[in-house]
Image 1 (cartoon, helix red, strand yellow):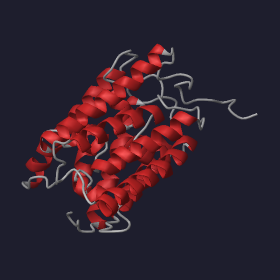
Image 2 (cartoon, helix red, strand yellow; image 1 turned 180 degrees about the horizontal axis):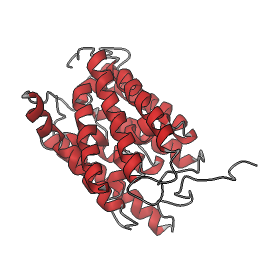
Image 3 (cartoon, one colour; image 1 turned 30 degrees about the vertical axis):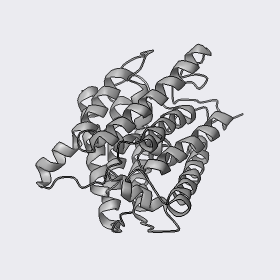
Image 4 (cartoon, chains in turn red, orange; image 1 turned 45 degrees about the vertical axis):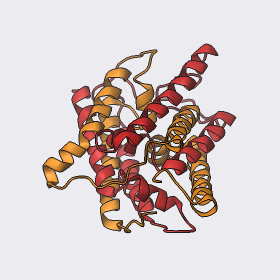
Length: 156
Length: 148
């Protein structure tokens, strides 16, 4: 059941990207172009997504566990470190350069032509390089943050 | 450079669909609908059902334009980047950056902000700022982009 719902979630996510116009890199880049042809649509996408998800997440996380798994796999560390800030900065440069990020790039794989496919391959290579570097340094992706969501003694 | 039409209603409702998808994935699989994290889930080491869930979600995402065409009868409109060094460099930076900060527009932007994650509250303004600066340099100082 979990895999079927994950597949449906992926389709719904993609339909949302298409309906909102966010599958179109030119439209995303126009949001980022405050000095030129500014298109505020992306802010409305974020408002719609966060509006639904913040309420849905709150209700979902009241449950002891998800419907098709034993635990919630949610990062709980919350540590602000250099790799977070530097990584976000690097991500933004790439996002601005092309107007594509992983979600729309995957959704447009079959219709976005060779440029989109090459962007996707390059992204995957970037993800793999960091994963490899982390494993060589003995730091797996789920550490140091525990993966479960219940943390009764998080605050002293 | 293409000027895009401001689409508040379809963007708001498309956003709501994205939010609903994220809730669905969390409710059933207990996972965050962050696309860079799910792409990471395709790579070893494999723990639990991370690989299966990632593959299923990403397959649905790839299939979405076909489902869209089937439902609406209208092909998806988009202006794609050209095959170029800029596109390749952008892809590499996006992959490295998302992996380092453990999240992208969907993971930090949609899911992280929805649960007020302190890390996402830092990551989103940072990547919005560097992206806007990059577009400013690209369009107004250099005058170009991967659309040729």
